[in-house]
Length: 313
Length: 254
Image (cartoon, rainbow over all chains, first blue to last red; front, side, top):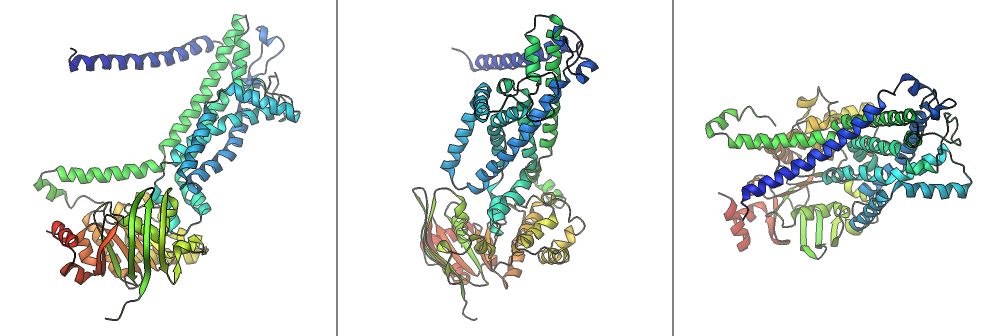
């Protein structure tokens, strides 16, 4: 029979192994993109739009895709935010006593979250055809917004759920109406997590290729109106990588690098803002308070008498 | 001693959590401008009873409330009056202080602002008044713009009490307000209750017998959702009638 010790060892090795595999994968991805992309990445690539023959290795850059991606994801994030914030506030302040309905809504949103983005793309395409829109920035923005709304709502909702009920009760017992509770109290408490949710969704929006394949199109120029098609970074990667010319392929990696950098900046921002979370400070404070009590209790009787006067709550 | 008026009259109150019968046939007359202590061990329905009084039970799914709670001649459970007006008549102090996510000044000013009093001068004056009333002014007057969460728990609890007073309630509901506090802060809160007694009707939930003895005028003793015994404090503590009361009093007061 296996002893407990060997069992323990086997599981430990297994866990270390799987952790290292996943970290190695990440490093490999980053490494490949860096090694292949970094030498090709140049000021020219970041500041110029493709010139004639760009896709055969001639001069130019991917500014069209960078700007297009930013336009598209900023627009989509803004549009999604306008819908996601009211929904999540509604769920957590107005529907607070309707557990069954809430569970149903959350379940549906999770389903939507799970729908592959290519399906959103196809759906967006049908709507476009119905309204007679051509592939355009607008169509892309709407499709991507639809795609990230469930993500944004659930990201907000998960944090909104953790707002202590006591705070909501306190607001209500002061005679606040539901909208006062939602916007003057609840919203203030969750601002940092709202920002995090928005940035997270922005990251998803800028990185997705499938939903914009049919809807935003692709072009070599920077769009000047909502009704023009637009290039995007994920599609820039896709098109350049499918080229047989090695130089162009390397440009795909450089584009991927730019995309990764943008997402990296966004997620670092999200981190910094989340760390300023004021829910956290309240929790920490309570934790310290209890720790003080416990420490005080654990001290020897003599010491306790001494420190008694020092502790301030 | 003059005959006391009744502030809140509870008739045949029954509360169900799903299938669980949480409160059974509660009848209480809560006297005006006295401290009524609801006493009982954990899980006997004290907090639920308190939440019925300002209808915070509305915020929970599958709670059913039946019966009558009459305040100022009106049954608040079936009232057509706006629920926010009913709640505004009562200040709530919960187990843990939950300061609003704003600075100290705005925590007090919030109640005034939502009832439509927005003038800067007036607000300044009232904020000082309320903070003095709870003996917090001296401690915080130099840092009114700090977030309320930077205060100690004891200070936060007092701030919450003041916040509740800003909407001019007739009644203060307190749900084990000192259970998370150290003895010094607890004493401060208890003293505040005694001082405020002449202006407000106080309903205090506690499981601490000693606290009840110190401040109660009228005691309601509950056990598993039922009222076992109620009466004026002297009578209740010195001459309990029911066996359960006797054992509770005997079991915890050393």
